[in-house]
Image 1 (cartoon, one colour):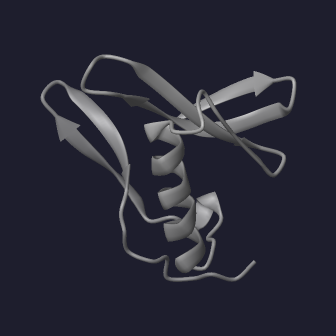
Image 2: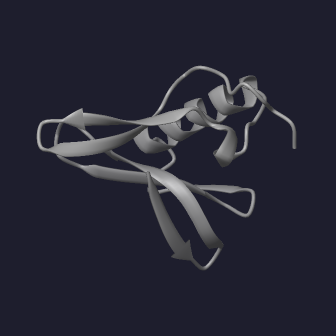
Image 3: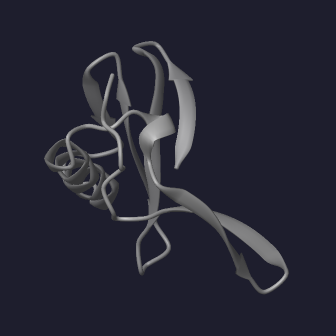
Length: 89
């Protein structure tokens, strides 16, 4: 996940590293999907995540079931695939 400020506004997105080492990025700003390339793997990934989020009822960030997972010496924040218990807005 990443956050960036561009001419189109500030957005949240995703980065992707291809097997050949090429970096790709895609993000959403003010209702726009922006990507480094129309065939970007990051754009495909972001579209899939948006579709999953919409199927889950488009929960707000504070409604997402999340937790910390230890990986070696580091802690990683993870959002589970389970739907939130409450979806009141």
